[in-house]
Length: 339
Image (cartoon, rainbow, N blue to C red; front, side):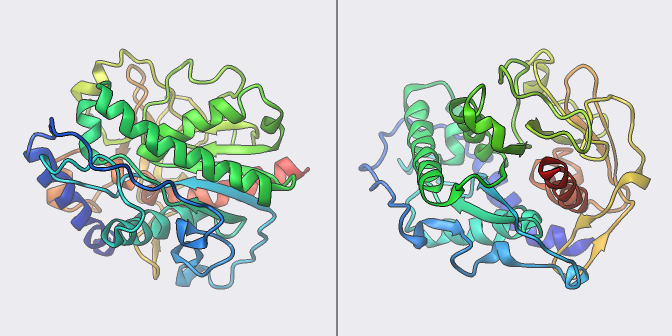
């Protein structure tokens, strides 16, 4: 299990260093960044028209049959950690450090889960810096999130015009990506004709409010289509203060059962943690939905390193912990959708 946490540890270090600084910044943002042109491949972190890290197939799946009959539009999480006082609120698409972190974290270990069944489209976007979440609701933060979402929307419009062509469609995301994906689903799918093409929305890593959608239901079975699923992972027994303040206004689907049942799911249902591109470790995770807060409590015996275990927050592992369950479920839902 060490390999996964060695790969992720630098990201944890960045997050910890930033939060220690307090995460507040009164400086104005830097000059407006140019709006990306999504007809250019360089502005996509993943695309079926280029070789990228989403194409990576683990060694243990080399003989797996693939059928890319559906598409996934994947919105990656935050990979821009500007320092407090820097004045940088949104990432430049030409920032190679940010792009590398995106490509070799979220695209490699999250978006790749879909590559057996889907063409993967993952736009780079002028993502809001991590510090923006610490002043969420302020005019400057709203401006940063608006810039980020405008790119996601424009990338999706480009996809619809040039690539969709009536194909089954999955929306997927994590963390900041889910913040934007929820809005994208509201604007383009919820009660709209495009909802007929929605296989499922996999949107973990961010609060999904109970009234987020009018007509898109939470998934209640492993083969339900036209629905959404999402979860936020914490060590069993952990309830962060900010989660308590939500007063239970959240929806969670357990990725071991693909239902909203609060019954504890045993590790026998767990198909495998993604620990790297060489091995998968099944039957190591059990999980259940905490009934009051609707977060996902997880037990991961002997797989979390000491410095991670202390935080009790498994946010960055939302995909990795359930990688094989997600991969298999994507196939199930697509098959059901086509039938």
